[in-house]
Length: 164
Image (cartoon, rainbow, N blue to C red; front, side):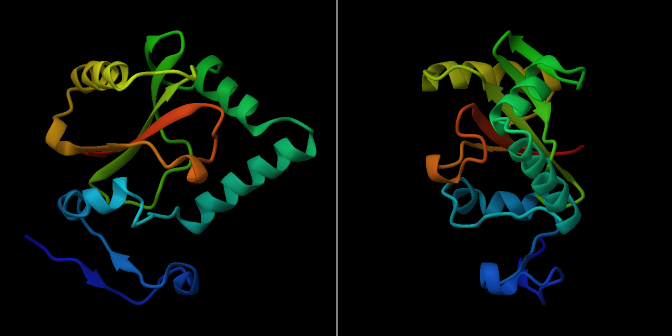
């Protein structure tokens, strides 16, 4: 098994995150799963992806629109590829993904309903895992802490998925 190593900061972000971990495989991510889901480690976007994200947020603000409304349309109503569980729960590949190893994809489960139980999320997760033919051991799934959610108005869970 490969090991994690601290590397020089390729994006010039070291002052923001303290140290730069070089994570090259899903197996290495899996070793850090507890730190990821408790947000002790935050995986950033590539600068070009972050720039796109910031631009879309700024454009929404400039138009006087809520960013959540833009996301709601993009996730639930646009022609963007998605897999639906029902009218308010979908799986979609992350639009602005974290910078991840090449054997890992970033997905989201979006639920446009305020009150959802842990049983509902477990049911939805099982449905999507089966639909996508993903093994539970190849998925890291979590919901960000409320204070760190980019779109707090719409519940969503992040999934890092090992590609076969």
